[in-house]
Length: 421
Image (cartoon, rainbow, N blue to C red; front, side, top):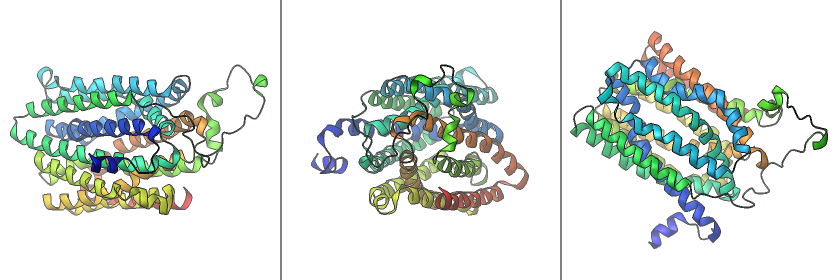
């Protein structure tokens, strides 16, 4: 118990922060169960059902399409509600969708199942949009700025451990159980993890004075409140003014990165199944190695971030992310895949732990939902465009060539973050 206590609670950590931090750790731990089981194997399941690259791309694109249309309304909706309650309820409605994956093999044939999964991800995208915007705002209000890198590092460690266990266990079950029963059980395990994650989100509370003096000051209104028109223009409703602030540069460079990032993602399951001929257990081992590497990298995240800052860590992480698709294209067997997974996990630990804090330090403390809504828009615009364009381009130039090209684009986006971010 003493070791666990020291691992999760820094000696200088004020006691009043510990409840929030504990529930944030448990939230991500159960989310790791969900991610390592249901989410991790969804695209593999679709590929084994006979899904094309375009259909796998649509699995990611549907939620992005919804988010593009709902992000700004979600930001405005969050502004009028306690963010902790909004995050909890949107997480519940989003995660109910995982429960509906379980009976699909009993109801439909293979192709109909693929389209049913695409339709369900479309519907799940509605609450997911508000959850994505709201959780970042809640994290900023529940974790003081000086502790965010520390908490993010511990969350990455917890996520890595539970993801590894879930991924290895899922791969073993899928090889042992007949198809599709194994996937139905995996989806059930993921649903339970989703429910427990939402339960712990319920107990996360905003803290007074969570924003530090190092965060951007709240912008002052141009005119006194009594002179403002009661009818907001369409530009005001969309909060287009955010594009006239310094936050424009982070938005643009992260748009470039996410475009490059999501071009490759729909191609990975196709390469695993059709080029490397991996079994479910081998895929589970590879993803476990990925998150084992994330775990190792996360233990160094706080120290590296304090030395380099969130901006440089984000840029360097994006540079490192270029290695995964490029090296995967050169792999010819499971051993190569395992090596690529280990390298990719370490670079993701750097990027995934740094870029949310990089964005938060650029946002005024009292205007987070609107700024985060615009980030959510560019993220999902990139996801939508790239998830459709990546498979189409790979169909014309080949999977391996496309992966190398997309690796180069990730490299260029990392340079852009360092230079202009």
